[in-house]
Image (cartoon, rainbow, N blue to C red; front, side, top):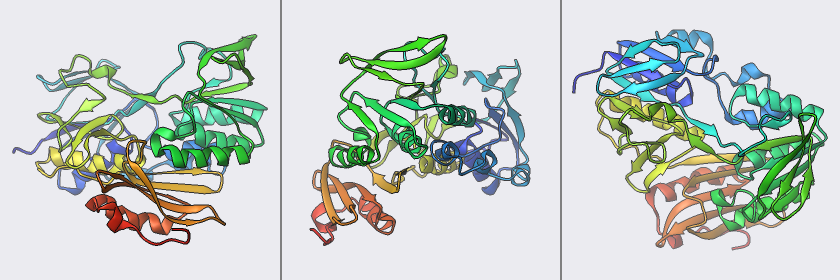
Length: 399
């Protein structure tokens, strides 16, 4: 395989930055261009819903690298400029400023965009959360608010609910599903999360959908639910998931199912790879998947870059993610949704700490810990090796 001489990375994100750094570390000496729709240099997103909202971090702390470290990449940074079209036959990329970039290697890492409600986002006090600017605006709103309605009880909604309660606000968490984060963790962990939020004073509205927002003088005043209940709120966060940011690829010829469809090596087309939240690839063990978690962005950015340089190794990570809510840290590996069987393998009823495994067809496919960081890393091996779950059982205080 001929080494590329001109590589363009679209997405100045964690995945895009890791791809660029991997290219240089693996010996790529050609032209490297970084395209980013936001005017900011790459920064970390997980703190946006926690430390930035809480005010415990200053905004500059989320920067992924110091300026001098970015300089050593020898890249041409085109920030505040979006990619608008891709021609995979001509191997050219058109930007929002009209510039056309030629490439012989392309990394697509444009991430996802938040889903919106059908109406109401023009009102003052209605927020989405994806960027650092979003987080700063939401923090200002929280500091001025007294009551908050959060639509969506996934990662983002649940974490923001915790921060809002820590700030002393009245918080209502709304979701059509029975408990917070049930898609991510299944019934048992979701019920514990529901109890945790209730203990901290959050009003849960499970099994309900939003039918509309109410307003006065251009500002939101509350949320109407499909069960006839009205939830007063002077701030509303819409956290109902996200969609892959692939609109600019509509005429590219790439397969755009759930994101950019890739093979086992993250390749979407000759000379084109994808990484991060929008990349759907064929995992050798778990099948086709698309992972919207921070660790995957880093690992997949590196794997995609190596593929561009000729590596033939399938990308086969053990997916890892975590969430911090109140004084609880939940860490998880592998597949942890509602499909697998759930087995608690260690538990301390006095502290509510526990560790559990998820299994499918008798083998471990996922693991989760609740305030047990040391055990989390040890359970990773069982997920990686797909250990028979009975063999993986470890005696615990209540097992």
